Image 1 (cartoon, rainbow, N blue to C red):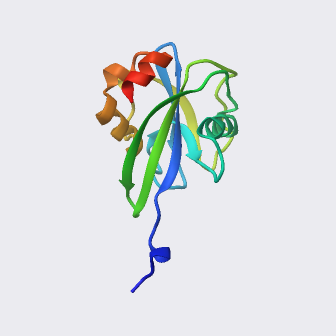
Image 2: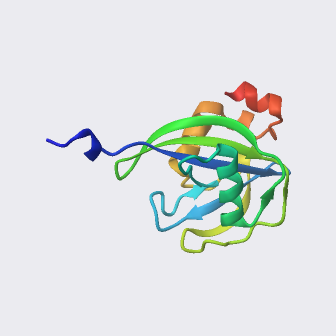
Length: 152
C-alpha cells in the first residue's frame, strides 16, 4: 500500500493569454503532455513565485515578449492524460513589447495569432476547460480589468 507521499500531486500551471487586435497568441506544443495541441504560452508556478512574476518569466522565456501589464483571470482544474492533475491560473496580457519568437524549439513548433472564433484544433485541455467556463464570446472581448474581474 502506497503512502500519501507516493501519490501524484496536483501542479499549478500559469497560462498567458496574449491578445492583440482581437487575436490570441497560440503555440503548438511538443515534447510534453499535450504534444501536438495548441496552447497559450505558460508554464509551472515555481515554489515561492508570484503568479504575475511567473507569467512575465514564462512569456519572456518562451516568446521573447515583454508584458507591460498583466491582469489576473479565471482558473481551471483538469485531470490531463497520463494521470496529470493541473490547476491552471490564467492571466491576460493586452500590452506588450516585441514580436513573438520561437525561443524553446524543443517545447513548441512556433507561435501564431488566431481569431478567437477560428481557433485551431486540437486545443490543450486547459484552454478547452477555460472556453467551457467562460465562453468564446466573453474571451474574444479584449478584457479590461473590470471585465476580467466579472469572469472570475
